[in-house]
Length: 106
Ligand code: 5GP
Image (cartoon, rainbow, N blue to C red):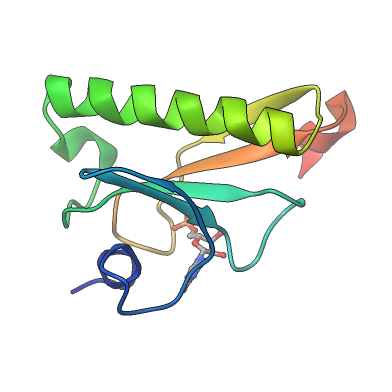
């Protein structure tokens, strides 16, 4: 099982931000800025495009709700959505509160 599947299953501790049956949101252990959050599917899926269209739509809807909550908790100009996957081979979206244009340089 990959590390994010273990986090979603509660086998590795994390700071939970939101969850439902399919998806889980938690704070990044090495945040670029305060409030940097990761949103993952609970099931073991390597890459974003391994999900079918319906699951992807539900994933985006969940991430959008989490982004709105982050914006309330960490007043900011906007919440950037970044899809990387350079380190962990489990689909995830980074949600990063941005205070100014300069934050785009991180
Ligand atoms: P990426 O795969 O998108 O390049 O980066 C993976 C992200 O996951 C990194 O920002 C890293 O800090 C975060 N990360 C890796 N392992 C853990 C972990 O065990 N717990 C948490 N909360 N974040 C992690």
